[in-house]
Structures are given as structure tokens and as C-alpha cells.
Image (cartoon, rainbow, N blue to C red; front, side):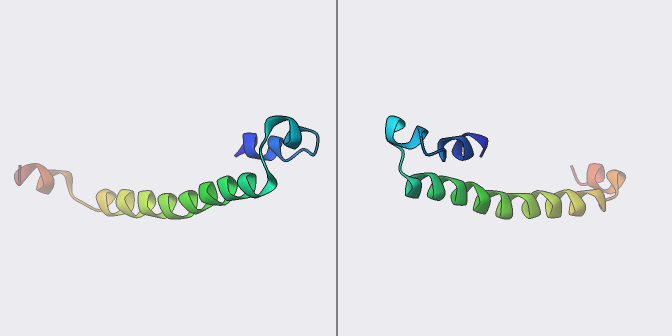
Length: 60
């Protein structure tokens, strides 16, 4: 995300060939990924933390 913000400088855009729309789409897709991935990770970790270790080993 930091690299996207750095490319938003007005002097960097014409030289690098990165338009503002491309930078915004890359940044927003990274934001969407964070919004989806973080709750998924936390929900899986919370569900696993509630499981009794001996019960999980007994079924293997």
C-alpha cells in the first residue's frame, strides 16, 4: 500500500506511466483483501481456540 501512495505523487505519475485510476484500483483491491482476510483469520483462530486439545487429538 505504501508503494501505491508513493506513486500518487504528481511528478511520479507521468514518468512511471502509472495513471491515477490504476493506483486507486490497486489500493482499493488491497483494502478489500484486508477487509475480507482479517475477519476470516480471526474467526478461524477464535473457533480453534475454543476447541479442547485432548478432544481434537482423540479424533485423530
